[in-house]
Length: 164
Image 1 (cartoon, one colour):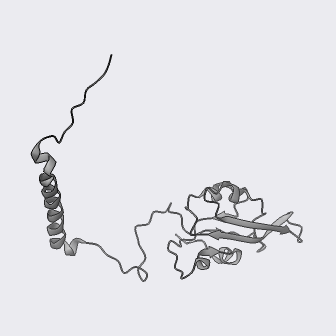
Image 2 (tube, helix red, strand yellow):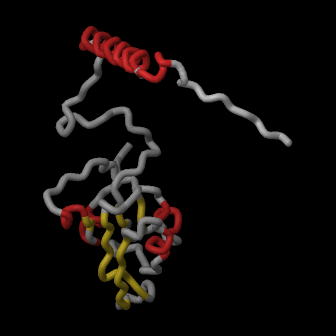
């Protein structure tokens, strides 16, 4: 009938004690410990906030930034495409009517919660007018309260593109 009988391992007294497995694990741990004690000069370290990592790929996504037009106005037209495409739902936009005649709408409120963001880049791909980018070169975020990790429209406009 196609029934396959699989015999269990661990039926012997030696295997039931688990001592050989425990000693095998301890042997591996001890060998790594001794190796790491001798390789101290080979361990590469950097003094992190003063010295930034130099091995970050060009394609690595940093913090978000909003772009401006040539006249200095916000490029975002508050179409909500980035907020809709965001799988983490961390983008919050409130639209207002634009009075300069460039477009119909502009964001009055544009917040990104970095603690919820998964940095997938879906918002950048979904934006039809290239208003949001993730090329600021800012890779670490420091704050003491949750509100410090919510980027406002002004902060997003202040983030500059990293010169490569």
